[in-house]
Image 1 (cartoon, rainbow, N blue to C red):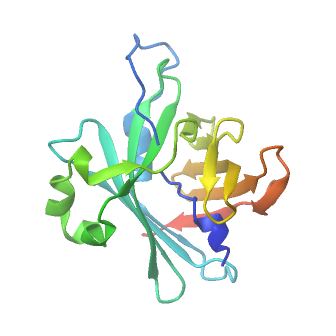
Image 2 (cartoon, rainbow, N blue to C red; image 1 turned 90 degrees about the horizontal axis):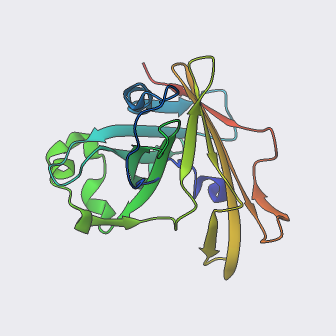
Length: 211
């Protein structure tokens, strides 16, 4: 399994938007998007390279306004815990896109399999987590004509400090979310956009909703 790829996938997770503007004729439906997001996805049994289970549940905490989700990634045949994240879902300022910002827990071990202990998620406050990526790494989702959503993290703006490489690198990520599938990928680049790691252009990892 490509752990480097997984280290930032799922993204899934990005963005508080400032002042709310008056709705436009092209305003997207955030409720429709969040209903698609609040599910469990798995790679197909025939996928020999990747074995992933990605589960997201809604967080309804009194101290948190808006749409928040707990996301957990388990990998391998044993479904070992790989990652936990908290995501905030908002509308863009012009209300034509969804903005997703990702946070990490200060004490992630407290929230393992959080769907089994919803009272812990309901007790979350802003003091319990911090931003995982810096500004510019928000994943922007826009609707397509087939009932799906296209997500993108732009390497022009998403720059992170890589502890492993001891330097700044750029991150690019693509996503596609629809009723019947969730597709994702990620790539890392040097600052001059020289390819470092990740999926090749056009390649995606396909995950399917668990019935």
